[in-house]
Image (cartoon, rainbow, N blue to C red):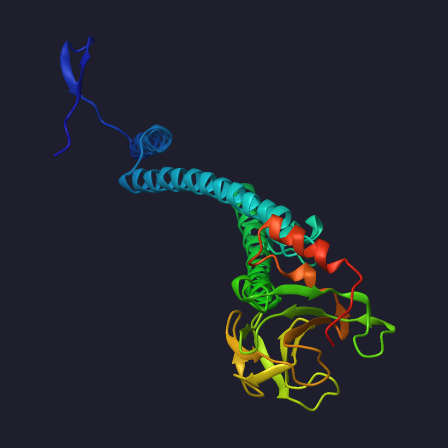
Length: 323
């Protein structure tokens, strides 16, 4: 119920009721509504500027948490980049140098992304620069990791080949030191025992009693074990791969057959004097890419420096060969 208002009339010395006209009532109502609306808007504005709603508080906490996670992610990315740089350096300076292959060019490792804008969908947001920068770094890191992964795959293959090569290269004497009578003749120009003419001797002669064991000097596959080659008598040829072939001649008998796979140190036959031979001995040759080379360079597997020095001195003497 609306309150009734009165005023004091000094002429009549009595209180009279205040009667408002309809226009005044409308005006007062309009002023009241306008004031209320203005006051309400002011309250809302103040609340919006200085008072956070529960939803805004939750969003702010989420944003703060995301910023913290971004900083941690950025630190982890920096650490990953340092680790990757270390691996890249070792890859170029150690692994590839050891396996004698060219290092990966720096421009290939650090290559960027050309063409269209890959990050257009990330533009137009409040933190676009930060998001685009992080995404770019992740893409570059991912590409560098891919290049390094491919490089390590290649290194693994090279290591496997290197291991196989080291096991295949002729590296020991074909006759044990304790079984040798002596190293009778070396590689080079020698006097032929039958014609007495000066002739190129393409291997080394090891004198030993008949029946002394002969061993494969490296891993490989037996290509021949027969007496079909002129002058060699019973002989064995082993293909070691990588261009290396060894020949063992004048055997009394074989211990292997054609196509058999052998390892360094396996027994392949026994000393004899078959074929064009003056006395029981082993004629031993090493071939690389189809050409004979001096076998004395391949005894590092079972000779001391002093023993090698003595053999080198004996092999350099231009004497008579045994075949």
